[in-house]
Length: 125
Image 1 (cartoon, one colour):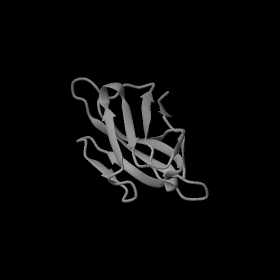
Image 2 (cartoon, helix red, strand yellow):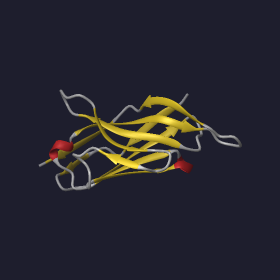
Image 3 (cartoon, rainbow, N blue to C red):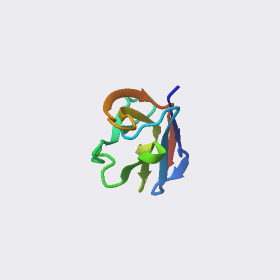
Image 4 (cartoon, helix red, strand yellow):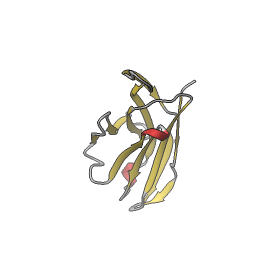
């Protein structure tokens, strides 16, 4: 069974930094397109960042210049480095698989959507 295991969320002071990790367990892929999203209390879930199969990254305006998404394909893990954290960054952070590439000769990409369970980030002023 494929699972996304997020970690790294904790409580920090404003201006601090955190690195979130999201590991795909239960399957081995040789490429991933993944994204991070967040949901604050009583708000809709919102897009934070995405990394595609060519390692092209995109960011929400609210985090641009402060957050960096990266991935280690060999470890099936995507990271979100968060710097200069603000109280408004407080939310549950979720990672999401969007597409994966099979391994071996003739490996191919296919869409696969799955969410992780979330990791809580709390930023105090």
